[in-house]
Amino acid sequence: MEKIKQGLGISRRNLMRGAAAVAGTAALGRAGGALAQSKGKIVVGTWGGDYARLLTKNIEDPILKAAGWEVIQDQAGDPQRRSKMQAERRLPRGTSDVQGLSALNIYQMHALGVTDKIDYSKLKNAKHILPSMKFEAGVGHIYSGKVAVYNANLVKTPPTSYADTLNPKHGSKLAIIDIQYQYTLVAAALAAGGGVTDMDGAKKLLLELRKAGCRIYPTNEAFAQGLAADEFEVGIMWKARTVQWQNKGINVKSVAPTEGTLAYTSGFVIPSNAPNKDGAYAYLDAMLEPSAQEAFAIDMGYNPTVDNANVAPDLNERIGFTPEQIKNLRNMDFGFMTDHDVELKEWWDKEFKA
Image (cartoon, rainbow, N blue to C red):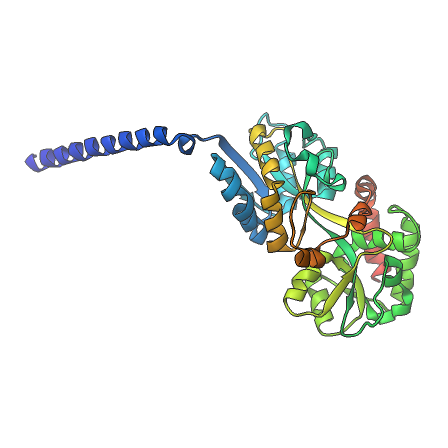
């Protein structure tokens, strides 16, 4: 019993010391001002891997956490995150404040009534957003473009357009990527002289390419392997990917097509039942800061979506587009592609690939 009393005495003394230490720390925190102020929690739905790591490195740690925000990432593939958003739609409070999606999925989620319209008056960086990256229900974070690419080991006269690239004359020296069927169909529509919804012209041209012997690679990675092995000469691909391949020693070059480059945009939306909408807008503004945009250009090879980011000329030459090419960036018709996606995929699988 005496040992127990002694033990309790020691515990009480330690407890008193600990309480004093906590009080001292709190006093220091009050003296430190902003360091002790917490603005709240922001939950970010995002892909994992390098993208999530770079969000932390370039946006969350240096800008948001430094300003007093707590940021928590909810990492998953976009199909899983979109399903979760839909499942939570009727709840008064969802579980995320912002979600990372492609431009097409930004459109689709808003059409389903899952996301808010963006109030651009709440973003101090709104005036710097490129017009093509300013969506009704989302804000573009980074972008690249679907460009003509060619194997510099084999091609002496580079293509200048989608029409030059998606041309039956190339035969088996032209490569197409299966998983990119949506953007390939739209590029083929432009190559055939139509608009972004001219699927009749696109299908006719693609069947001609197939008859001429064009190669079909299942994935972006398989396309890169074929390129490195000199299996083909030309194709279409994201410019950012070609930069990554160049960094790995593949002798590939790219050209912005004269028809206007199809843009691929990764951006963020605000769920309609986001629990912290002030935090959501803080996140959007932080991702648009020049420092964050410049860092993503260096780290990932994608272009800034604002006009006040300073990208070094040598890097911009590799990843970027001229002012005229930026003006000519084209988006697919997201509504059309959403409405016709099932039938287009069925045609691709059963007629084009057959």
